[in-house]
Length: 329
Image (cartoon, helix red, strand yellow):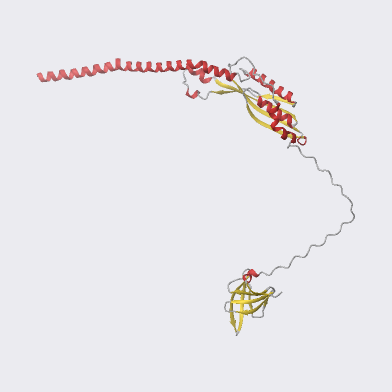
């Protein structure tokens, strides 16, 4: 009875300890761990915010330096200044019939918005654009030096821009050109230095490197040549008729000496044309074109041609003949 009571007491104590430990873990240890983790996270956020606050003046200064190279801080101002500058360049360069058109502003959002939290505190940073783009096109007409000057003056302007397509369509035989220039400028909404960008006086020496090309104007169509005056020199002599074509050469390379034989006590040379398949048999004294068969040997024949005496072995063509003795004189 005493052992049973003692076992019951031990088991009951263990259960109490386990239940108590579970209660302590659930009500004290776990909440404390969560609180510590939240405190660490808040400390990290505070450190990030403090670092961002320290870097804010430098970042704002960089933004102001970029904004100082733009034409304004809102679409209306930028559009007006952009049109004014392009029209002034065209007028000062002498471009005829200049027309400047602009497009609707296009907002470019931050590429880092996907990495930003979706909380309310970050929503304004996620949704506000990084910058705004405005496209412009300048068209007009003029000689080659004028249109090239316009393009170079636009390129030399100090405000932020990206040159796009430059098109020259020649007319009047290349003496004049229709110019079309497209470009894109940007501005930072709400960030402005308050002043317009100053344009320095254009330096015409920038085009000295193109002076020879502009003077030559490779696009100009050359004038038609002057008509040739015909001088009457009397009746022209009739040209001599062309000489007759030479007679066709005998196809020596097509005739092969296939063998030598003796039939009915008479020696013969057998020849075959490799192209037509024609077969000929020649006895001593027989002829083929200007060649005369003079002798038949065991494996060769001797032929007399105008150049002299030649030898042809069995299995070779008549063109492979070997000179034995040249003709006198």
